[in-house]
Amino acid sequence: MSVSSPIQTIKIPTSFSDQKPGTSGLRKSSRHFEQTHYLESFIEAIFRTLPGVEGGTLILGGDGRYGNRRAIDIILRMAAAHHVKRVITTVDGILSTPAASNLVRLNNAIGAIILSASHNSGGINGDFGVKINGSNGGPAQESLTDEIYKCTQTLTEYSICKNQTISLQKPDKYVIFNMEVTIIDGVDDYLKLMQKLFDLDKISDFINDDFHIAFDALNAVTGPYAKKLIEGLLKAPEGTVRNGIPKEDFGGLHPDPNLTYANKLAELLLDKNSSYSFGAACDGDGDRNMILGRGCFVNPSDSLAILVANYKCVPAYCNGLKGVARSMPTSSAVDVVAKELAIPYYETPTGWKFFGNLLDAGKITICGEESFGTGSDHVREKDGLWAVLFWLQILAEKRISVAELMKDHWLRFGRNYYSRHDYENIPTDIAFSLYERLESLSNKIIGKNFAGSSVKHMDNFEYKDPIDNSFIDQQGIRIFLANGSRVILRLSGTGTKGSTLRIYFEDYVPSTGDLKQDPQWALKNLIQGIDSLAEISTRTGMNRPTVIT
Ligand code: G16
Image 1: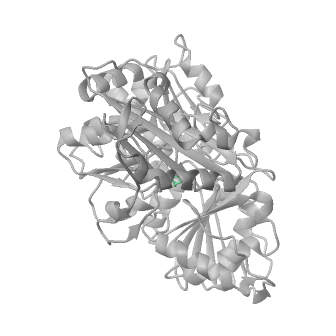
Image 2: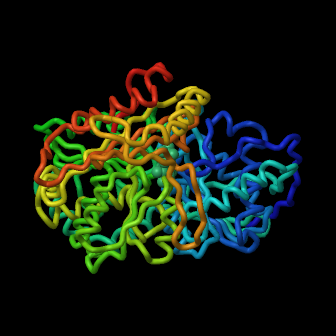
Image 3: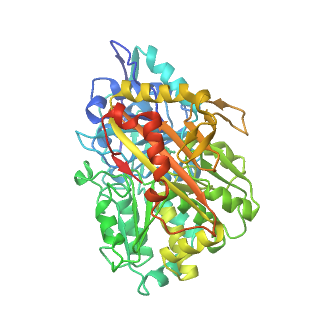
C-alpha cells in the first residue's frame, strides 16, 4: 500500500519549559503528555537534534501502556515529515527496551524512540514517557539530551504529515510520504539473540526436572517475550508466565519488580515451603529484573556480583570478562568479586547511559545497578529476561538452589549487607531543602560520631568518563564511615509526583563474620543515624519509607 502525504507545519503558541529529560528520557503523567502539542514538541526536538535523521533508519515501539498507540501514529507522521528513510516498528507497537536496543544494532539504525515510563504505573491516571536511544543502541548521552532540551525551549513549530491510518496488527509494510514503515514481530530477533548467548536446552532440562519456576510480567511488555521464551523454547508448563498480556494500564498493577509492587510473586516465593524454586519479574519495558528463590530474595547488587562470579557457567561469557561496572549507589559486592578474578572494575553515576562508553570501548562485559538492572555487551540496555536466563543457566549448571548459591557466594566473598529506602512523593521544596542542608553539613561532620563509628569522608559524587573525559557532578551525597560502611542519598530522576528521596545503606561483613542477619537489622545503626542526621522523618512527616528493598 502506498499513500503520499504532504507535510504540514503546525505552530506552537508557547514553547514548553518542562521538557528536560531525566535519568531515562522524558517522563510525565499521561495527562500531561496529552496537552496539545506537548508530545509533538519533544519529538520535533529529537528529530532536529538526533544525528542522521534525514535518510536514516529509526526503531520505534513501546511497552504497550496507555498513550503508545497515539504516540506511534504521531511519531511515524513526524518522522516522514523529517525525511527519515525507514521506521521499523512492531506488531501492536510492543517492543521491550533491550529488544529495541538489539534492533538498533542489527539494523544499523540512527537510534530508537521507546515509549515507556519504565517501572512507573500506567493508564490515563499513570505515567507516560519517551526514551531516546542513540546509534549504539544505548540511552542517549547527556550531551544529546541537553541539546534536545535546549531545542524544546525555543520551538515555535513542528512538521508532521497529514493523518494516515496504519494498522499494527500484523507484520506488514507501508509508505508514508517517502518513508518506508516496516512492521515486524518485536519478539523474534530478541529471542534469536538469547539463543546465541545461552544453552536453552540445558536450562529447559533443568527446570523440567522438578525445578518449578514462576515469571510475573506484571501485564507489561515482557509477557509476549516470556511466553515464547519460557513456555515456548524452555518448555515450562503453561501458566508459568503470569500476567502475560500487556495492558494499557497494566491491569492496575504497578510494573516495578520489587517486593512491594510485585508482592504476589514475592508471597509465592518467600514462603519457605513454596512449591516454586525460582521466581522472577520484569518491569514495564522489560529492562529491570527481580530474582527470588524459595524463601529468599536476591538483592540486585548481590545479583550482579553472583552473575560475575559465575560467568563461566554461561556459554557466551565462559571465555572471560573484559571488566565489570556498577553504578555508584550499587553495593561494592561486585568489586570484591572483580578483585578476586583480577578483572578491571568501574564505578559510574546512576543511569545506564554511563555504561555506554565503557561497553563501546570494550572495557567491560557485564554491568549493573542496584535499581534491579543488569546487562552485558550483548545490547546497550539493561535486560530483564537476559538476567533471568543468566540466573537459570548458573543454577542449571550447578544444580543447586538460589539460597545455596547465595550462601556459597557469601562464604567465599563475604557479604555486603545492603538496603535501599525510598521516600516517595515528598513535596519538592522539602526534599531539596533536606538534601541541600545535608550537603552543607559536609565539612562539619568529618570525624564526628555516626552510627556507632565516625564520619571519615563525605562528598557529592563526581564522575569523569574514562573514555571521552566528559564530566558530571552532583550525583549523590556519599557518607563514608571509619568502619567501612557507607550511606548515600540521591533524589530520583525518574519520578513524576513530587520528589523521591532514595537512601542506600551498605556494610561489609567478611566471610568469617555473621552472614545470616536480616539486612534491616544489620544496617539498623546506619538507618537510625541518617534519620537523625538528615532529619528525614521530621522534615518529611513520614515515619517510614514507602518502599524498602
Ligand atoms: C532509569 C535508568 C537506570 C537508573 C534508574 C534510576 O531506569 O535507566 O539506569 O538506575 O533510572 O532511577 P532513579 O533516578 O529513579 O533512581 P528505568 O528503568 O526507569 O529506565
